[in-house]
Length: 347
Image (tube, rainbow, N blue to C red; front, top):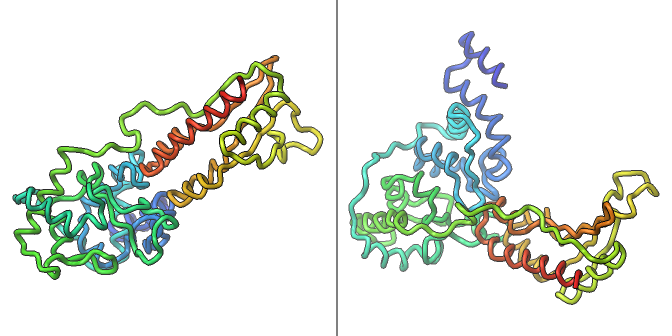
């Protein structure tokens, strides 16, 4: 696609913007479409093709959003993309609506943050959270009421604050965003001065950042490993009993390489034990459907060199990778459960 666009541009068949858009379509499909929809209609992510979103967004805002992401809110930071790649994606998003993107001054807006705090609790907290942490569900479609067209974004978020200028925030408050639950605050009866106060309060979040999902913290070990003092069969039997004692239901046991090798050639000293706490599973799936990648719980037991080991993927590490702060506490709890089950099996 990039070579074709370059050739067409070289021979004058594409303008520079069209060449960028051609590259951007492919890059968008690779990096953005899974969450924001193939044509920007939204899904897990916000609908980027909304005319109101286009009219209220600057190219700078989009570039910085791609670069910074939203820590703890599913949207990752795309640090591996080149500046040209980011520009191409922005151009492709811009091609969905006529007219240019918005342009905003970079100056700060003066306002009374104390009054803004009161206004925020009255007019904003019900959607954006009492501390600006964002609406529940972090943008994952299955975890929020279906009647909500879009989950309220996190305002108390390092990625948002680094991307959105004061004047963009003000413009959204003044005009609202047609096609979303966000209404014009002028129509709610607020004065422009009140809106300036709200902007000043939101900008003040920079001085007291919320804890992200493991941001700046050492990554948890990807795998929990516990060596067993028992033989292979006894270890598996102990693990099943320990799981049931800790409110997990045994589902099945199978050879690790079942389905990979021909039937009858499976390694008899490498097994997987599946167990599940269904209440915890339902809660996790409602928070983020992607946990289906590692739930229900799986323990791998192997015997090698006369030693038996139990292993499990560490949910705490997976939570950090998923970039969803709502999962942190749950996955930390699940990691402790895994450790308890494996410890009990080795008593």
